[in-house]
Every structure is written in structure tokens, then in C-alpha cells.
Length: 203
Image (cartoon, rainbow, N blue to C red; front, side, top):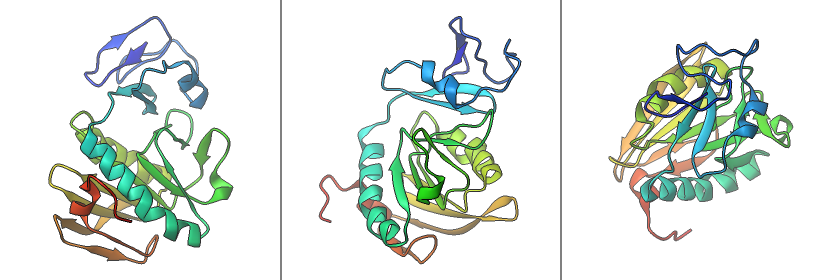
């Protein structure tokens, strides 16, 4: 069975969503994503369920594009790599999310997924997955050990910066509009949320 964003369950596969019990005798994992359709939707394993998110809108994709252009040079200089979705992060059985962006060491990158603890994960909010990105994924990414979690909201626009302290995320900064967020961790970079929605990059 597959789960969509409404919580409905459909199909004849042995997948499950939420409280719907699977007939599998193991937790769903990376290989279970191989059977998902190539239909433009995003499929992830979250809390043991395969969850589908519809394709994002243009503001989401503009923000992702600008973040890639912004993060790639300092990441390269620091010996890190930047990967946009679709790129799975295998935390473990039952948890294989696909963040919008992952910044990780090459030693934590396999042919199929990022493993271990990324330096940074980024989610750009969309109407379909806002609550999941702000709540469930905040917990899941903390459990997975991502040192930093950035949440970009194109609707405002804004950037919320979370740092992993012990086992939970603590907010280290929040900027909106034309305010600038300047940091050295995990990368030396300046982020202006409004500039992430540029219709044409000037970089």
C-alpha cells in the first residue's frame, strides 16, 4: 500500500502509512523506494511509511535553484558536496527522507544515497508538506544527526536556522524579506530570503 499526503492508502503493495499495519516483517527501507512510480512526485520513507508529495510550485524550485548556486562554492571549498532532491538520505530502516538539499561529506555519499550525518539539510516549504517539514521532519532529522536544518518559506519569504544541540534542534536565527543571515557554520555564506525567489540568477 502507498500513502499520499491526504493519508489515504491505496494499491496492493505491502507498504503502510501511519497506523496502518504492514504485512512485512521488517521496516521499509531504501530498496522499497525502487518500486515507486516515476511520475514526478516525491516518495520518501518516513516513520515506516512511504509518503508521496506532489510536484512543487515555481517559487519552491526558484528557491532550490538559488540555494544550490549559493551553497555550492563554499561547500566545495570546505570539501563538501551539495545534492538536490531527489537524493535519499538513509538514516536507517524506516527513515529514508529526501530533503530538498543535502550538504554532506563525500565519504558519506554512496551511489544510491547519503548515509551518516550530513552537515546541513534544507527544506523549502510547499503547500503540500509544510506541517511535515516543520514538525515530523524536524524530529526525524534531529534523530538522524544532521548538524544544521534550514527551513525556507517562499511564501513570506523567510529562513529559519536550526542547530542540533544534544538531541534536539534549537533556533539560532530567523530572517525574512531582505534581511541577511550571515554565518560561518556549517558554511561561510550570506542568505537573503527575498533573493532566493529571483526569476533570473545574477550570480
